[in-house]
Length: 169
Ligand SMILES: [Zn+2]
Image (cartoon, rainbow, N blue to C red):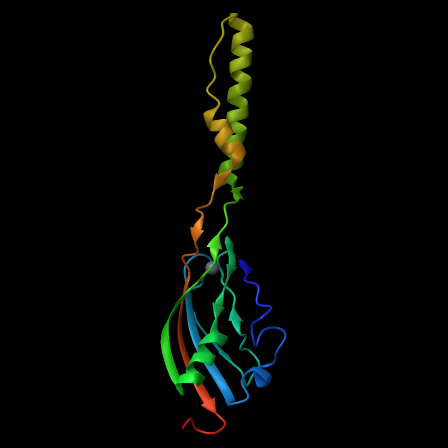
């Protein structure tokens, strides 16, 4: 899971209950399927009635920053429009941070590179010759393999059903 966006000013965050944020609604059901990094691609279901629905469905991309899917904003839009059902796709608004990704491959390459450097020094000492060692690979490895930085690629397909306390006029 990535680092979720700050939502201090949002309704129906940790600060507000569903009842407080949506007094017009009896229940809201969201079926959703996330696609992208770290996503399982399976369909999940959340409902206000059984307290599984959150205003922000977190993004599963571990490199995602300030992301997530703002279901509560969709609910507000639907109430404004008097809609009971809506389907669509949300793109995660998060960005991918550039981080050092330490993998087994990076570690193995680092060890190999260190050994190469050592071998070159040993060979120089043995032969009395100077070898130019190109440390490009080492430097790259030391910096780590950067993850792509840019927009988070994750998307959320959703189907929302709202049950109003009184039918929308
Ligand atoms: Zn994301």
